Image 1 (cartoon, rainbow, N blue to C red):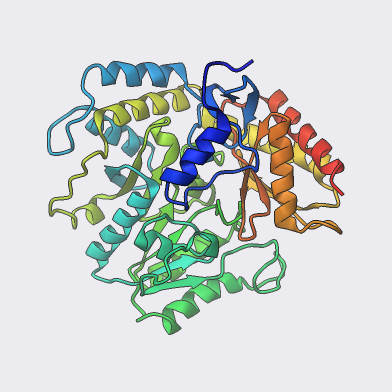
Image 2: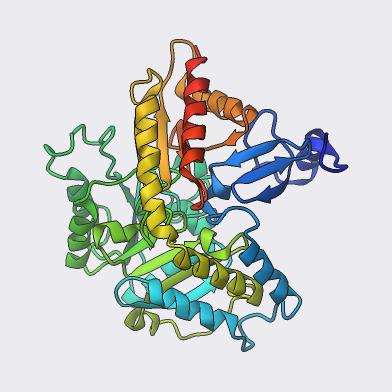
Amino acid sequence: MPENKTPGPKTIIEKKKKYLIPCVYHFYKNPPHIIRGQGLYLYDSQGRQYMDFYSGVSVNALGHCHPEITDAICRQVKTLQHTTTIYLTEPIVNLAEQVAQILPGKLCRTFFCCSGSEANEGAALLATLYTGRSEFLALQNGLHGRTKLGMSLTGLSFWRTDPNPVGGITHIPAPTCYRCPFGQSYGQCQFQCIQAAEQAILTSTSGKPAAMFVEPIQGNGGIQVPPAEYYPKLRQVLDKYQMLLIADEVQTGFGRTGGMFAMDHWDVIPDIITGGKALGGGTPVGFFSTTEEIAQCYTRPGASTFGGNPVTATAALAFLNVLQRDGLVNRSQKLGRQLLKSLQTVLGKHPFVADIRGKGLMVGVELMASKTIDAPTMTDTVLENMKDSGFLLGKTGPRRNVLTFMPPLIVEEQQIHQVVNELGTVLDVIQ
């Protein structure tokens, strides 16, 4: 029976088609109408339960409606909901203090905004102010937002809606060892991906770009994990040309990959980190953080109407408390290994599985075509069938053929086995 009286998916889709801009799309041919969430589960208008292994695209790191976060939000909403940054409130400075304590290296200053897109815009501005330069490098297949500049920095055609991108941005091949863009194999290559970065600086720019944007692990690019040597070598190249390194940790930050930040895996400290998603505990959040020296170049007024508002800052403080108190970063690393092992055991030799990769609880399964279905259609079919079985996964990749696992960090080992076994069953019946 339905949980309450609702118009149902059909009526909502009709309104969506009539009133929303068409770019706002949704998964599934037959989408459920989601009305409630608790922990690892979502519930639709018909009372069906779904195990959520996508976490609202890495937002709900503590699951849905975590009681400590929702209680903190409710208390704050009843006390002080909004003032903007031009008035003095305590939650925003307490949050900045807590973020400073977990940032790597000398990063200690933060600007709060409302989304990852806005954070990347701010990081680009900060890099320009500090260096006095205006050009940027970015990776092919990276995703850095839906704004004018964010789309231009993005190296995925699927997300580059703007027909006239911003100039002064050069994209270089991403360090993807599976299907290496240079046709090499790891252990035998000469790191042409690093050589490509320096070559681009010398031949496609003025020779003095401001910075390079990277996602430490590409999310929408298909959960691409670079080789261990990549970021240390890249840092050397950027330092040679006095360029800043900007790490877009919007998806990867706060334990998602088994480190507090994904760049921690390679012991490389960026000059600017951008983030958001998980930090807000389900409320809209974005931020960019940097060193004392770089921060001092941004002194003209830069207020944010909603950035760091009391409700979001309070939710973020509650999130960080639970994340650290419950040891969820290390837990993500441990359960991520279990997820990869389970996927390899069940799907490692499956004829439709091309590759399994990831770090922590950020894992991708790249699918390939059958004799009758191409890889993107295969992926959509699997997602639909998994949904019908009560499991929600994501999809990413340049061809949209990578099944994406980003469950809440509170996921249990038994739930991992449950979703992986169901995926094996779903793939087995596809021809």
